[in-house]
Length: 592
Image 1 (spheres, rainbow, N blue to C red):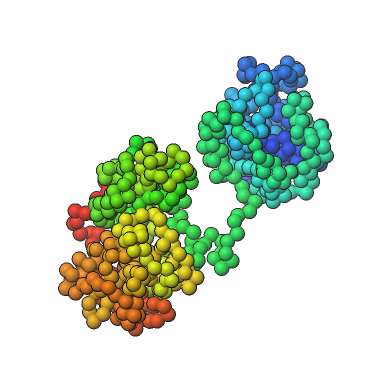
Image 2 (cartoon, one colour; image 1 turned 135 degrees about the vertical axis):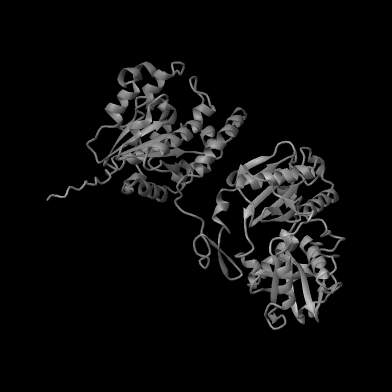
């Protein structure tokens, strides 16, 4: 008997590269780069006549001549030019995205074809725009919306999505970018692609005398010079730039990268080192695509992570002029939300913020953010309220006339796995050289964003390979750590510093009440560093890390160097609190 087997046809080698771009995007230089290979036939804008025929109102001085020598019928161009074999191993087709108007793109999915989307920052497109009697800078002329559409269409119909490359990357790092581009396309890189002779080329379209004067003077990729040219943007082009940037930013996020920023060798690729522990850059991969809420009381809304930003005139940028809260989400509840919102508004009032979001507006923004991201558990929220955008660069609040800016940043971030908060084995602390701000300087009861006083001790802790740094007040007594309140246990009693020089934390407040309810004596007083060195137990606390045992301070063991019984008991009881009925918890509405 004969067994019949279906033969598997291997994919056809890449024979054709179709490049889609807008004008003034170095597209002709890119064509010359491929033409210089010697094994590639280049075809310059074969759909130009099709575009002019479809747009009779578009004037070009060579319109009649072009329509005589190039077919204006798109299907004919596809059949006789775009899908035929050429005598060279490769064929390169240069297209402007707008020239695909009314064209059935199904031909573009044929085997052996690959597509490139060439983009350029719209500022550089506009700055290099040369006004003529028959062209005018516009969003349509830049072709970025059309490029987004071409990318979307090709991604849907082709086995492999188009490769996006930024012209400025080609200019600044031509060889590295071309090597990555060729690898993505499945084409061998040729060093000949880096330079070409000056003057007209055999592949030029008949319109070259009108447009190619500058590129005809070039002899290769110009390095960083073209990207570093200093240019003034015409006032009438600012609106075009504003409209074009979202399209460019979307495509730029998809662009190939010739190289990534160097990372510390000990961290490895895609990781960060936190006091000796190697962690992924994100605590959860889901955080790559989260939505954040950003805006004033009248203009806020949800935006993707990579588009979430505030103005360079925002007070948080100008002077750290903002207040904030950290929230945790447990099993369908926002823990102590009402208490946190009271403190947020107290801080805003102390800072004399004007036109502040109401408490209900903040709650609604939080719930909208959680719902949009599908978050109900294992979530940390960074809630920030800035004084808002200024009319001009200044520290003066008088220039804040637009209302406060609210930021709701919710991340998948469970306590477990965050190295700074090792709540199982405990952490080590050092004592910082910096002292905690006293109330006569910057009152820590205002939960403000001006955190230099906290960041400098954290830098010391990082260099000492410690989790955090204990900060003393001006008299030498313990205040808190750079990020958490601190407790110690001695002879069964729970002690914590007065809140004169530290934030009276909500977790701190909750634990003091919890301990008292468990029959543990709670003492709030001045505590010296020596007492912490001699403590039986110690732990820090805060919304982010809950209760974190401290087993070593300044190189000395705390107690026997293990997590103590009082700390363990409080950890266990604290973990039950989110499930208890508490009017200060907020039940998250059901998501649709």
